[in-house]
Structure formats: C-alpha cells, structure tokens
Amino acid sequence: MASLKFLTPEQKKFWQENGYIKLSNVYSIKEINEISDVYNELFERKHRENLPGLEAGWKGEDMKKAANHIDYTVKSIHNLQMHSATFTRAIMHPNLLDALEDIMDTEDILLHHTKAHVKPPEKGAPYLMHQDYHYFPHKNHTMLAVFLHLDDTTPENGGLAVYPGSHKLGPLKDHGLTDEKGDQYHYVDPEKYPLSKATAVTAKKGDIIIFSYLLLHGSYLNLSSKSRRMFLIQVRAADDEPTEDVHKSPCQGMVLRGKNVHRDASMVNRHVH
Image 1: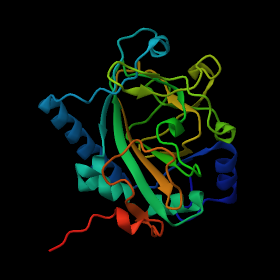
Image 2: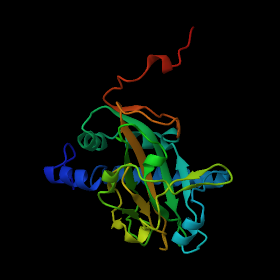
Image 3: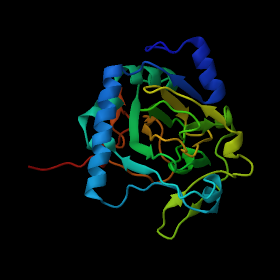
Image 4: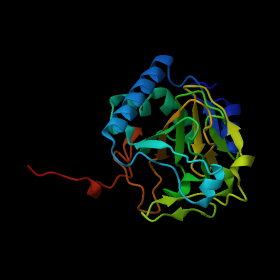
C-alpha cells in the first residue's frame, strides 16, 4: 500500500485526518512466517509451563455486556524481544522504521514496549473503545502503536475497530475501573462511544496498522472457529516524556533509530571496576 521509504501525500493526509493508517508489504512473506512460527512456539511453551499471568481479558460489567455474557478470554505475553531475536529484528526492521520516521517526522524513535494477544476461537475477548493514553500518558502525545496482524482479520474473528479522527479530541474522560488485585482497565464511556458504532479495520496476514495512542480503538469478540493473533509494538519520539511514572517494561527507551539526546546521564547505572 505504501512506499516503504516515504508515505505518499495521500497517505500522509489520511494519517493526519484519521489518526491511523494500514500498510502492506512492510515485512516479507518469509519474515512474517518466521515471526508466526516463533510466536506460536512461545505461546505453546508458556501454556506448557502453566504459569499465571497469560490471561489479559478486561473485567467489569461493561465488558460482560460487550461480550454478550460469553465466558471470554484472551492470552497475552509482554516484552517479546526478551524471548527471541526474531521479535527484536521485527521491531528494528528498516522498512518499519522508514514508515515510522515519515509518520512521526523524526528519526529519533524509542521503544516503549511490545506485547502479543491471542484471541482463541469462539470466545476471544473483545476490548471496549479506549485510548492507550490513559495507560501511559506522555507530554507531546507522540506515542504510536504498530499492530502487526499474524492472521487475516475481520470483525468476525475479533479484528480492530476505530473511531477515525478521534485522536483530534485529545485525552478523553476515563470510564475504566480498578479490580480487587489493583489491575486497571481504561476505556471511554461505552454509551457515548460504543464498539458497535466504530469503523471495522480489516487486514491481511502481514499487514500493519499504525495508530496514535489518542485514537479511540477497540476490538470485537472472536466468534469464529480460528484464533486471531497480533503483535503490538509501541514507540514514541525521543523528545517526548511521560507525565506519570507508570507502565515500566524491559528495554523501555531503547533507541530504534537516531539518537536520544534527552537521555540523562545520571540515569545510567555505572559500574566501577
């Protein structure tokens, strides 16, 4: 869909007006198949280990309504670059960074975090409309998400839904909740911004969707007979900074392209030998 070095003027305009864009052919078929295979092996291994922490379905009455009271579930693993070099290569891919540089108007790009979600067949959890802003607010709102599809995705198998142009609204009121464990679930008013009125974004295996962390987005319940797999990369400009000390993860601040002249040397651990 896009030039891998620069977006076309039409694509740039679409991005600015809508807050998201879909790109194809960023990764080769061979690269996508490698990512897919390593991804599957990682989830299979984590299931065999039977450790807690894979469940990532949101809680609350609003979620139960969105899922039509189905016993929904979704499995999640964070920080995939800590598990395999395949994912490190994916987040450092020159084609991806070319696209991000053009969208962000800077070559100084930092990693925030990565994660993967698998929505299992027939009960894969939906997500209410939300802004990622509420999870990790930043001063200049440069934060972007890269949503890599590892399966053909439609509303029927739990695909992405967005409110085009909603990034222009700025941060919206949080209607989320905190559960008994202290876990937070952030989303906007489901009466004002229902999932049912969002725009579905279909994608083929290997397509990426890049979107602003201010864009209202969510995803549908997977009622199909197949899993829906995604790999998410969250990045920001180096000259941006968090407004709250939240959502820390390994490799946060890793320079993916350019440099980080704003890095405070006093923050670096130094070893005396």
